[in-house]
Image (cartoon, rainbow, N blue to C red; front, top):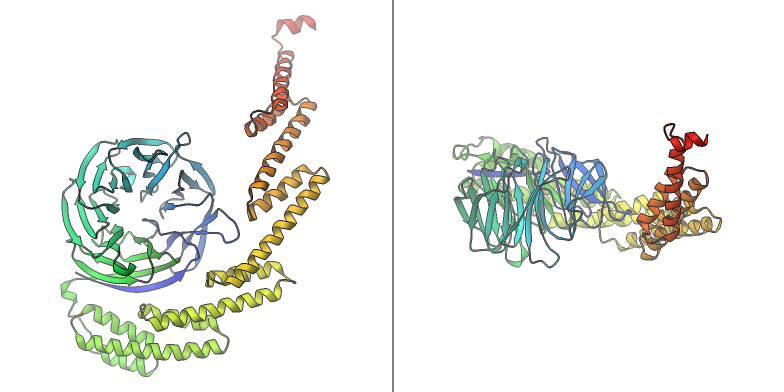
Length: 563
């Protein structure tokens, strides 16, 4: 088997989290989690469409996430912070294991989006538990284990929950928490994947061992790769296994292997990988990197019979395209031909020559575009060239240079609008930072805008507080806190919220609405359990509500006699 890869698109999404296991759909769209630039602790879960455009699905509000697991089949997703697991749906969140104090280890949702498996420890890090939960928050089972789990995977519906640990132990349990099999390797397991039908588990270790285990706990095949395995994935339909390995000098490489564990494709990654995912039909593969770069590849699996297939006019057509300065089309044609016949040195030499002409021609044209002020067109041209020559250093440097120039140009335009249109300037600064994350000038100007808005909101809040507009002051303080959280403001908001709820309770009490008054005072006691005044008025409201209920009861003999 031989696998050829073609880069469909590549784009940097600032701050994007690593790809989830089941984030890619058959229509070549993928789910991606990204933080909002101007709203702390707020994230957007979006579909990246086949043309690399973005379609928002929902937003999440939570402290710093360590991992999010989502599926294209579900509107629900699960995530974990350092000490909590959360379920997210339609902008709302619910915490799992609310009565437990724990440290999270891993969490993984199944492809159907109905259940999730994970692992956690107690606060001392001494006792470890593997669990399976429904995504309505109910726990299917939770069981202590006798090893330190590191990664977890699950089949559809939790029919198999696989946990792997630092001592090389890999366990499989069914939906009832019964032990199915237990496997042991001599190296710490750092990656694990379970197919949807629970028929195959693919694991990777810290020392480069990759293996496949069947439904009976027997190893089908084993491969040795040069480095630390951070991710393993498997496609049922194509039979391909993907393994991301970080080798010497921190060079990261994606390896593709066939159903026997034999390598059938490799390509290096420029940065450390944060995620990898197959589409369900196995025809596409997506990767994410530490810098937020997401790459989307088309995969073509060739059998031995395909290797010698080569149209006779490929070289002639490529030569014509080069004469017409259609370098990208010529390189793509020759590259596809080379993947069908990797032993043809003649073809490989023509591809190398075509790529040299591609680099020369694209650099010349893109430089001209950049000099004319059209940096966007220059970036797009180089990006198209990199699709057929992704590892070319010259093209990568040009793309970064043009991106830097475009980012600085956006910053300059934003500075010119700071006095006249702050909102427009803010949008330009956000775009500049998205293009070049290290744009210090844009970040400083954006921070100044943010600080100004926070100062205005705080000043408005204090003015309203002086005018006894407690509710308005609360709204402004909360707006400032969302932009730039501080401990002092948080305590102030807590104090004012208590006062506001207490005042509402007094209003309802004075109006004789004792049930509503009890509700308001209960909210005060929830925020401040030792508030004596709220407790006192709540007791009074309870008594008066009971008296009113007795007075209105026609069956009460005492009040009937009094009438």
